[in-house]
Amino acid sequence: MKVIIHGGFFSESATNQETKKAKQQALSDIVFLASEYLKDHTAVETVVYAVTLLEDNELFNAGLGSQIQSDGKVRLSASLMDGKSQRFSGVINIENVKNPVQVAERLLTYEDRVLSGNGALDFARKNGFDFFNPITAQRQLEYEAKVADSGRKGTVGCVALDTDGNIAAATSTGGKGFEIPSRVSDSATVAGNFANEFAGISCTGVGEDIVNLALAAKIVTRVTDGFTLKTACDRSFAELKKIDGFAGIIGISAIGEIYHVDSHPYMVWASFDGSLQVFN
Image 1 (tube, rainbow, N blue to C red):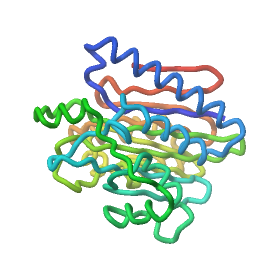
Image 2: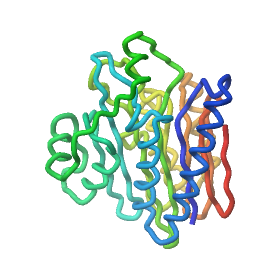
Image 3: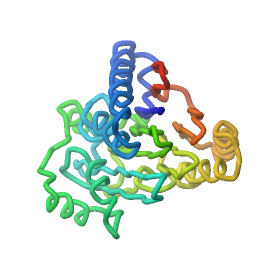
Image 4: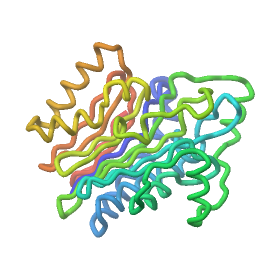
């Protein structure tokens, strides 16, 4: 029974100690709650629970407090993958919902499991997800001042291994900020979020770099083919370096390996494997 979460990349963690401490504490609290939740819930239920808590915390760029796109709107993307059933679900560029990862969870049992834009929003409304404006006052001020903080390559995610040995991964993002409206990130694709019976991976960083390498799916495939989780990640990040890519991952394998790696410093993450670990 293991769980690991991440809060994306935050360059200001290097200079703002108050912000850094707040994020560390939030990650610590959330991963502990997730580890307790995992004791009597499945991996799928746990990753949705953990990512929901991350979406509800305005310190992270997912759900509440997400980055605003160039037309003044927030569009959210999230995905979920059940390693046991090999079912993937997600929403892309959905507006005015509080927890896109919960919409992805609802889609997991449907035949059409990845929806975008208005279709995703219609599905959410029909399934009881009410209107919610995720723009905080701080994000609005940033937008109005046209302050595009390119260092906030933020995403949140969780990978869990439950007591039955099943793995699940969930990832959610509010985008990179000030992007072209309806840009598609990696977070609701198998490039950024993937799991099977052997391993699960959640990514953060520059979505285009992650998609170019099919990063999450590639790492999981390598583990499936017999690589250790560390070797699979390190080899994939060596390939990422060749294109000067910017990414970070968290992962868990079926044999209990927990691993994280990033191409740049200041990815924030926390794990619980009998004891708590929080980094950055």
